[in-house]
Image (cartoon, rainbow, N blue to C red):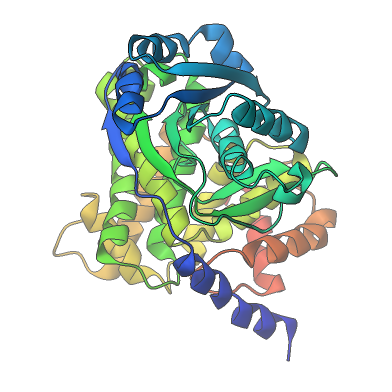
Amino acid sequence: MSFYLFRKMIRKLPGIIIKAVPKPEPVLLDGFGSREKIGAICAEMGYGSVLLVTDQTLYSFGYHEKILNSLTANNIKYTVFHNIASEPTIDIISEGRTAAVGCGADCIIALGGGSVLDTCKIIAAGAKIKKRKSENLLRKFIYIRGKTLPIIAVPSTAGTGAEITVAAMVQNKKGIKDSTVVIGLNVTHVVFDSELTIAAPESFTIYCGIDALSHGLEGCLADIKSSEEDILKSRECVKLVFENLPRLISTPEDIEARQKMLLAAHYGGNAINKQLAGYVHAFAHSIGALYHIPHGKAIALCLIPIVSFHKNICRDKLAGLALYCGLARERDDQDTAADSFLGALEELLKSCGCERGCNLIEEKDYQKLTDMINADSTNYSPPKTLSNKEIARLLDEIRKGR
């Protein structure tokens, strides 16, 4: 059996596994300043003590203070852990776990972006299995009898959707970033507070938004059986980004658009949970890791070449997405509608100032990148399995910006 056929066979495994992993179904709260409601939520849930986890930047801006005030007003004891770095390590997780156990936390409040949210998943699991060493938490799967400590997630970025995904990306002892799936993840509430995203630089807002769009788009194109509800959420993710990201570029203070981008990211997280990612992420992860390109920027480089490549086998899905987003007409045939979507996607990237082509990518690295892409893509459910020749062709298109 060829390696290509072997990869094609095992590609079905992630879909089978992901269906079996229970997913959180949190209560959603939104609105400017909505994090002030967290104290009342904790009181209603009967929590006596909580651990608030955030990163050093958000802590220095004082974004946690409204939460602390609401906790005090509701007689909830709290401990603050703000040592989270952009690349969380097992040592940071161990410190956070010690803090959670030490204060007798009934709940963890996760205030931040993907790094904070992912770290809190491991802390919440580790606090429930106290006998396991921290370094042994970073395995492919963490199984909890019952559920982790409850988590109230307060995302500060509109991109990753990490507040709902069961996977956590953290560095192991060797400094390698890897994914751990938390079985029994207990995210009870997600609070979308657009006030947290206002100070973000334009480029950060753009690349977070493109990342969110890619989650929804790859969910729509995934070779996996999905419920109508999940397909609708993935489509809505894409539509919300098309409608609201340009608004934020022209009017950064548009609160309504910021709230909708947070919801788009959440729906994108649902796509990662239920439908998995595809080759856009496999290529972006590999290119980003080898050339130290930020994730959102790498996603933007890969979107057009890879989605265009999949047009022939995803024509119906792209056409349906174009209709849903108002980018095509009912009378358009599938080819025309699919082309309308691809054209609109290219125009969106252009209007956001996203670059096409990358002179950092070198032909001599194609084999190494191919190996990385093949390894990473086994975790996903793309429309088809690419051959090594097809991967090299797409790398060439990404490099040259075709």
